[in-house]
Length: 468
Image (cartoon, rainbow, N blue to C red; front, side):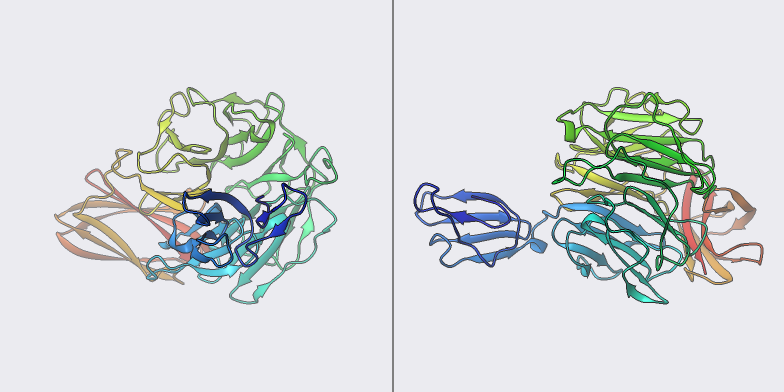
């Protein structure tokens, strides 16, 4: 019998005995061979092998097998090889640039949500284990457990964490209420009432916030979705909340995304897995949830777990589903499977690395995948004769943009803020070879995230810059 551990009965179930006491917990599968005593046990740590009914057994570490059950991942805006991932029963791991395929542990338990603090590079991290056990790391304070929560409240297994893109020390989390911190997560205070329909059965944690999104262009606008189908919005930073779920399905809210420049433009996804329903649910609103439009189009009936709205390509959306990643090039009229190299596996979360237009996917059972979107979407940003880099990044006052080109020509240089608003633009003449272009961030530029877009002859590069 497979439970947290494995048990064997020698008398038809009258008595049970644990037989693999030192194996990794959460046992899922047991295979028997024709040879007596030869068995293979599968669990959250990998597999265990025996040829004597587990009197003796060996283990195969899960890090040597591509079977990680990843709930969430994040990618640093300054380097796509700097990654963070939370895995079922294996904690949260960080992958440093230049480390090959080596991941270093950061936090234990069930690694669920995890975010890199873009405004505190490179050490700033927001981490959580199951049911809201948050642990944060900052360059100023080191590692700490945040305070201010009422732990008698209900926190989802995978409680949301949202970092402000514009205010350095603001971070949000959610249980059955939304909490906000203004001191980088040291202390939290509630900014909402209970946004759910109440608790579920005593033995099940239900009635929790499962999706949370802060509008990038206006931090006063916040959306929250729950596991019991409630969707809420505040326009004043949490002083008052309005329910905006009229016309939406009564299903588990899995993700909410807001347009970078328009806080009233929002997308939402649902899963019917809890209700044994496979019907796909993807909706969009142009008016902050006052009305919703179903954009599921011709998607197959399958639960949807996350959505990415491409900030570079208009009308391109990407969906994480229980059978892989789907995309649309026409705002949801027609959907199709992205690529052919990913197995049919649940995908929990998507993240976009815009400098190279790379999509990352967290799968539940086959580790993490990435997909280079350049040639696929028609943006020739993989051209070998046109490369762009920035140093230093993060920077304090000045960054040097180096443009390497195979020919002489004209380029345009645009600087966008974190909400993708154009804040500076210039044109330059470059020659074949290496062209350093210094850019000075004056006092009118607050610290935070910026995008530098370089275009020439139909080619495009996007760099994400951190201004400290």
